[in-house]
Image 1: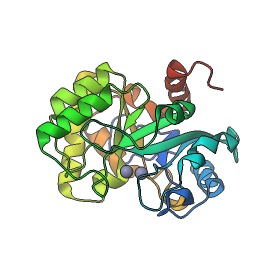
Image 2 (image 1 turned 90 degrees about the vertical axis):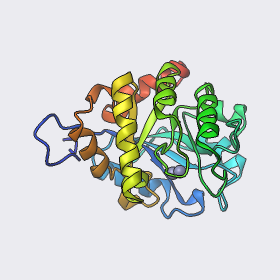
Image 3 (image 1 turned 120 degrees about the horizontal axis):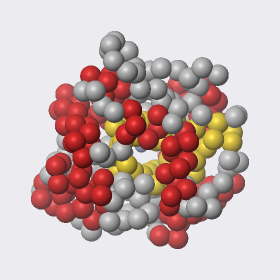
Image 4 (image 1 turned 120 degrees about the vertical axis):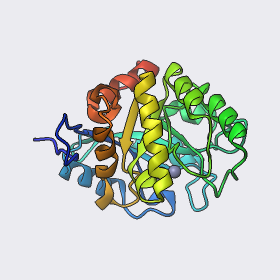
Length: 254
Ligand SMILES: [Zn+2]
Ligand SMILES: [Zn+2]
């Protein structure tokens, strides 16, 4: 099947995505599709893989711990699309504590850690920097969710470099960065440029809360193409690249 190209209007090399590593189902409490609908939508957009990453337990309306514990019930492929069993864990405090314990996180394929204002009230830029540096030290976290959020400024240069050292994937979140405010988009570009400077891998995701939005990454890709972001640093430009990342952490992943 011919992969869909989301990028547009740029004369250089287009980045083609084969996976969406941040998606929500009904289980998040404020999202609207089943996992079957999400996987079917991904296949229609020629994606090979999605990560199902419902909100962690601290989010109002989210499922309890057992939901995530039992994600092994998902078949590896749904509707022909590989489905990673994941979570968007909430960062709870300055110590970078998450709303999921280590036993649970180590069972999952893909762990996003994100700050949300309804759960972790913003602190000072210095405190956010400290928090993100601690998050970088957590070996169970795969990706840092929507770090461009305006409410949580931090020392981008110092922290992004550290994310690279610790092997964290930095998210370029199409919804958060490009549908909130111009400042979010500006922050996202600054972060992307620092990832490029320090050789840090990113993942470009939809953060879809309904199946029609799966794979919607056009604005994020347009920005990356405009700044000449290297394709090899985009983790989800290849499903194999995503699986290789997971196997580094979990060699028994099948
Ligand atoms: Zn989020
Ligand atoms: Zn999300």
